[in-house]
Image (tube, rainbow, N blue to C red; front, side, top):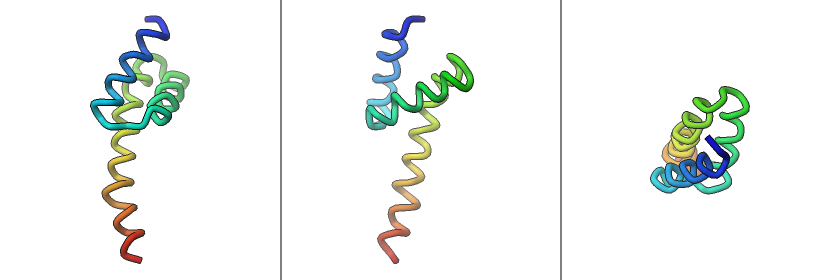
Length: 65
């Protein structure tokens, strides 16, 4: 698997999950460095889950205080 192919897939998954491009790239690089190809593939949904939790839990709590 070449970098271009993995970057293209990361971009497609990032768009589907509405993850910003910078977060997608950082997640893929960190996941790939830690766990290889599997880590790179798992990193984007994990980043999307963290973003979702941040948007749904943290931001509303900050608005109420």
